[in-house]
Image 1 (tube, one colour):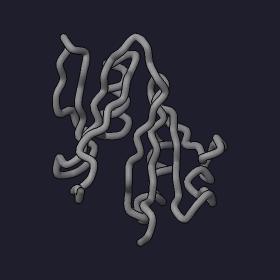
Image 2 (cartoon, one colour; image 1 turned 90 degrees about the vertical axis):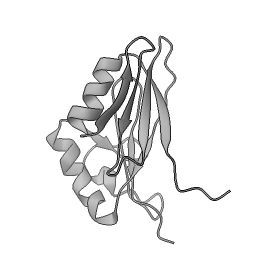
Image 3 (cartoon, one colour; image 1 turned 120 degrees about the vertical axis):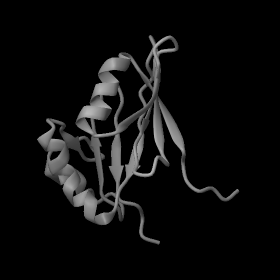
Length: 129
């Protein structure tokens, strides 16, 4: 199967309003759809409305994560972007600070940060080749 990429991923959240605020106000994603009765929301995470995350308010939350891909140039700006918004980034081993985006685990750089509830969004520079 050849895909064009991932269209959407879902996260369980304990507080939908807090989660919407985090992803829209802190990260700048755009609200695509919200259904208060079903306690769900979908947010556009990329330009061109090609990728989204779904937030599902649940009583029992399982730890999860989503990983956002950025250009090699953008990864250099991510730490400052997160820090300006009061979000601490961490490396794969949980170490905080600007070194979090310079992991030597593999050929890419990663940053993991704590979202609302138990969500751990991640930012990756894709593998070359």
